[in-house]
Length: 153
Image (cartoon, rainbow, N blue to C red; front, side):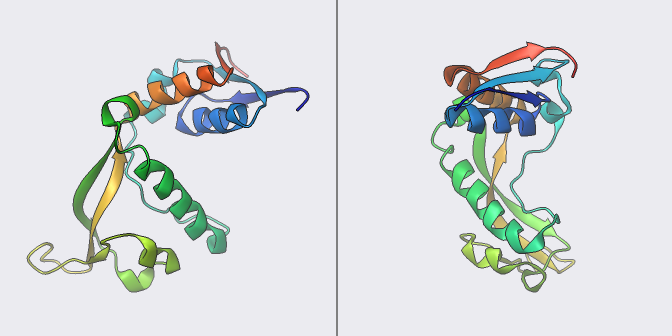
């Protein structure tokens, strides 16, 4: 591939985009005014769960693909920051989710003993320790030939 790609933003979205592009053979520079560990992503929650975004008909497939990727990181938690957590997703019902929910192992309605207020889902899902995950993404980017530059766009 010819040319160079510049990705703006050193948080999880920017780093992930840059990694995917670099690993696909693009020459990538990531521009960020701060180091990845100083971005908002470094203090954000990293629990896997599909967001209410558009186009709704594609969100399920995207979410399941990211679940597959994160599940693949679970065997190296110290390196990737990925681990599984169990708990109740409050104020959520199975019938309010898309067809993707049937593909999530163990996702079910919470029992009253697990969540007395009702309308909750029990799940065991990947969560990312974001500072660790950001370092891991940066290393992947650099291993694929990408560069991180501290600069504003």
